[in-house]
Length: 156
Image 1 (tube, rainbow, N blue to C red):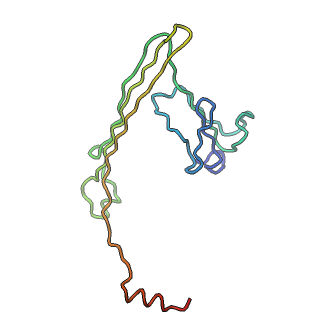
Image 2: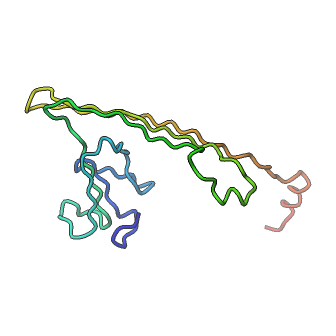
């Protein structure tokens, strides 16, 4: 994601103020489940010196925590091939049925006190099975023995 005209590699991802950068794919190293996020901020310019090593967007995630009362949640994000419209790209290729894509992201979170007004706990568990259609294999073409001799005979 380009922020403030900068390249995506110039973004900085943090969790609770700690670097969470995966430079190989220009994104966060650890993905935090939405249910575990207490606050999220994105700063794009005029940020303080603590963000001095990156010139792009400053993405900071603050995690939820426990409190003096026990609280929790159970959730599911459900996406299924039968809920989606058939993509026009598939229609042009002659595919008239939905290719398999089934996702059930489900989980739960719980938080509460360990020692009232002093220590708290919070935990989140998420399970994310995805079922996708496989791509069909294609023919693999390789030169025959005669073709290899012709290639070797080329001036090099």
